[in-house]
Length: 274
Image 1 (cartoon, rainbow, N blue to C red):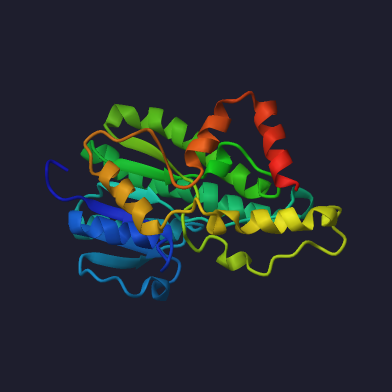
Image 2 (cartoon, rainbow, N blue to C red):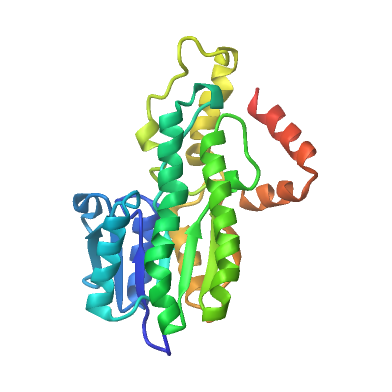
């Protein structure tokens, strides 16, 4: 960036979510912020002129490449990329249709994989850049009833760790951003979720439904604006953290991640089954 304001690209920027909030927080500090989502109308209402909206479906390499090419065409560079787009996938593993699980991995893991392949060659050529992958505390220590989502984020964490090594020779930094409980719309498309009538887990229906909304109803949940302000402050530094945990329960889950695996899982089962 050489002291100039950065060109920023963020995925998953529908109104009311973390991506939208990140765009608002970045805008005063950036030359241009490119906000992307599958539907342009989902990003209406940005208050600043230097936030530009682009259509991008992270499940389509063609869509990603078109958006990235547009940024390079207009700015000649891309300095910070936040791979935030993702979907929820809640429910017991045995009740999770394979097609739905595959769709979760397509967005939550392969979306970042595709974005890396489209963006990183440009960063390598300019010998600078910051690539941020948004994971989850569930990817650190999985909790009952949310296994598909947790597995997709655990895969993403591994992708970030490997990319960090592979980007080092080209002076490109990679961060794994791990949100805890942050107010967003992550569960909106799952409202009305119920267990199948023949589910063997019906005796645990109450804790399952409680767990479903915990990330948004917990007293530990922090506003997206507070979360985004901290993230932007970190990403504007010359040297960024490799792993950045932030949000409600994030430190506690990191601590559990240091426990022997069997202890941590046993503890979470006791909490998630009553």
